[in-house]
Image (tube, rainbow, N blue to C red; front, side, top):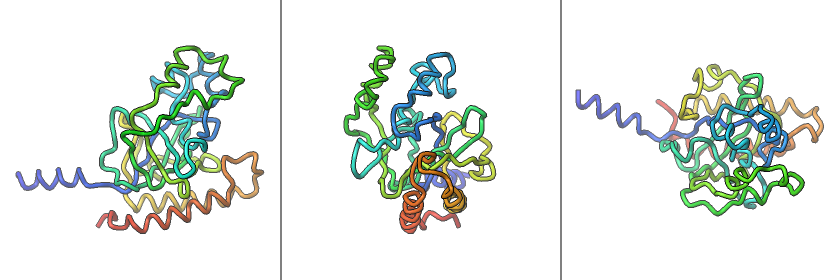
Length: 243
């Protein structure tokens, strides 16, 4: 009995190569301040069910693919990182960000590669990134929150990370193997799920070539290159394949 319990505990603590993480919806490609969603929230239509977003009308994940923080890295957030860290995620692993639109349809909205959780991140002043023309419309309590940096952040290499050119609709059970995401807001993924999901993303991205650049969050060629770099990174994670 004790041996079985010890084996179970060890299996539960095994590191995992990837996870899917739920974030609030953004209409700005997670490139920074989303004035449209913010204005809707202030008028009584919050963009997510998260209590923080309901209270402050923004999510720190809106900056997950903001280009101005670093030349090499994206610095991002996903709730509730400050309260519940995914301790089994291997350093250098993958994160797929998923979100629901207003129609309650789930999408993959972006991905981080070569991810680390940074305990003492650089000071990032989100308020300084809000466009000047929008600042006069932001209440003081929101300004104070924007000026308060989180004590934990995700850091990912830009060469293999990206918002998807357009959010890709998914079926949670078919594509991720779960019926939903609970209070933790994330679920670990084994390499079999990761490879299948990446294959679906590649097909989806290639099918967007007919769209104009202004309709896309990132250029299709850049997205394809990022996916290629993810494949190279995965070579180092093959040891996590389940037997």
